[in-house]
Length: 96
Length: 197
Image (cartoon, rainbow over the protein chains, first blue to last red):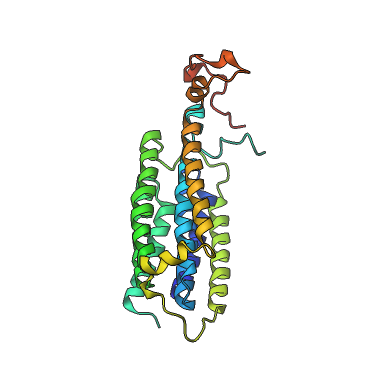
């Protein structure tokens, strides 16, 4: 149960980071923190209920996080080469 | 209620997570993220998920964060401070929202009542996880799909970073004039720096 609370705290801290960070890379770091909090809660549930399926799902989360980081950092590098900034306040073509 | 090591790990988890979202130097934030991942791996070992703990150290702390550090250095985007803030009161509102989210999730977690006699996890070693992972009736097809996803993501990352060179290298019959066009330098492109209104 301790670890469920720890995962809730980590998830909330990551959400705070996503809302307040203003560089795309640091927003991305906070998203990784939130993903990791979700994985931690799955492992805690695996221990509490005695099922191994949650651990398999965490392996998938890690693999998908690797794919996501490859694409996301590729996007950030491409945006930086074109705009010379990764400030999320300036990248506002797709929003008002 | 909770022992010394649990309290220490909880403190380190929350402290390093706060460092990730508050430190002003991006390299320091990434290093704090590595610390957080290593503590999480230790917690995984304590929770009988040893294989996942190993993968966490190798893939997350080893590969993913190193990729982050590499891009931070490459783009010289090391500082989180990027000029005047458009929403100066946002951190307080975000902190309030995060506090609400944390209390809601904690409340939900404390509602959970685990079964009296949970099954055995066999330490979460590979010989326990492997049969599940490769069972056609459980996770085999998800595993194959994730493998394909990794391939697609790799190709996408390469295409995203070098679109002009790849377009120039592949001559399409409908657009033969594209081939061999030199890439204009960054300063002469039309899309310049976005203007903040």
